[in-house]
Amino acid sequence: MSIVSASTISVLAQDGVNTRQVWQVLDTEPEVLVNVQGLAQQDLSIRGGSYTGSGLSINGLRLKSPYSAHWNAEFPILGNLLSVPTVGTGIDNVSGHLVGTADFSTRPLGDARQVYAGLGTEEHYAGGIYASSENVGGYFDWEKARRIDDSENDMERSSGGAVLRIPTEEWNIDFIAAGQSKDYGAYGYYGLTEDVSHLLDDHLIHAGATRGDTDDAFVRVSGLYRDIRDQTLDDTASTLTNVFSRNFAAAVEGRTLEVQHIALYLRSNLEYERVSGDTAAADRTRGSLLLMPEAHFERFILKAGVNAVFQTAESAVFLPAFGMDWFLSDNGIISLSYTETKQQPDFQTLENNPLLEQQHSKNTELGFKQYLSENSDWKIGAFFRTLENASDWIGGTATDLGRLNISGLDASFSYYPNEHLAFKAYYQWVYKDTAVNDGLYETDYPEHMLNLSAYWNFLDQFTVQFSQTTRLQTENSVRTSDDFGALATLGLHYNPSFAQNVRLSFLVDNLWGSNFQPIPGLKSRPTTVFTGLTVGW
Image 1: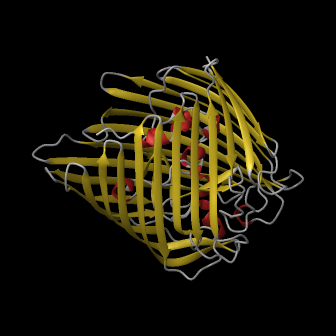
Image 2 (image 1 turned 180 degrees about the vertical axis):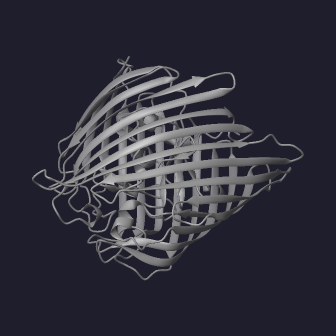
Image 3 (image 1 turned 45 degrees about the vertical axis):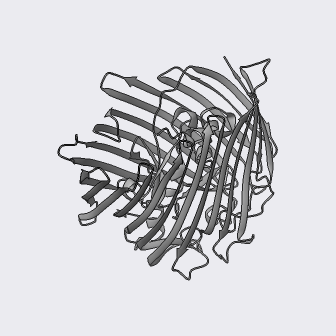
């Protein structure tokens, strides 16, 4: 059955000035919550998890920021050079981040060349150039804004990069090289009360090769190098801190051919992290080896294996992974899984509190998905997560919360009758058994959340995209706004018939003027308007 909902709903991520950055692509994915701090920095949350437990991966290899997990949402590459992400939890996230991972992959690009520019309220300017052929793409992108939230906070960002794909008869080989520089005021961010600014330089190189279909028998090899320089400056531009972090990662994975109903999935992963500069120089290594036999029958798929994890300064552990898919009919599936993951805190958290131990997540999931027709589907799921050694930032201190039990339900409905229209709704309920009500991240989460995403192309010239996150946040004494928030974005694009290579864009952010604070205590952004012009040839 052909499923086109994801690529249709997020079509503007592939073509448009409004969704150039990866976080803007994720903001149209209802299963991912993007907590935006101004225009400058974003935290991801999947199924109520903190920014430390949610992140990105590219071609199955997870991206990490060793010093601060706040940069887990950063990916210095243009959004339209990548596929629409798939969100993995449970058995689909054994080698991912602690709670959930949004996985991007490279894709055939097509022949396109365009230059774009735009301006908006709050002295917001943007521009860039993009060009691609079937297997090569590159870009340069620039953005600047004043008063992105607080009157003290400005932002300027530039990025550039390229993707190269080399398809052969048996292998698809991919290369990515990208970098960005971002300078922004951070008054009120991360609980800071000082007038400070951040300067972030982020560079990434990725290489990978895939043979076969990852849903069948395949082999995939991938590796990456990433370095991040994170500077904090005071209001006189004097450097307060200057931290360098480097990350090397490599993975080999594959699935054997099915023989007598049995296949074997294997994955070997190695990560090296190092920090230096105005922090205690430190490095660590994490390796894992996952062996998971799979039994395929007419109505069942069973998966059961062990993930051996080796980390610096920690004893080796052997973590179970189990999954089952029961095909009730040709269009209905019941899924059950149990997985465990261990992760050391980022160096910034350990710098603040060296006594924190590695976190241990135990995840149980039960779900049902049904394809109602060729153009609609729905699913519902329940999950229970135990997080040992959970932590949160409370009053500027990384605080040990001990054991945290998280229960939740989620459900979604997708409707995509054709390439011109798509709609998706996602509901989530989460409960955490904690009495803490003044944490900024782990203990601050939406108890109820309804995300809507819609796309409509009409009259062959107009495109409307709408997304809204409506949520009732858990009570938090640090938040000075309401606990209820309705943050919406509306985009209108016009392709005039007399100039087919021209596209006019109009975007309204915070459509309803909500004063909700995605991060407790951080002033919310006002309603803003942005207009853009794209010219292709």
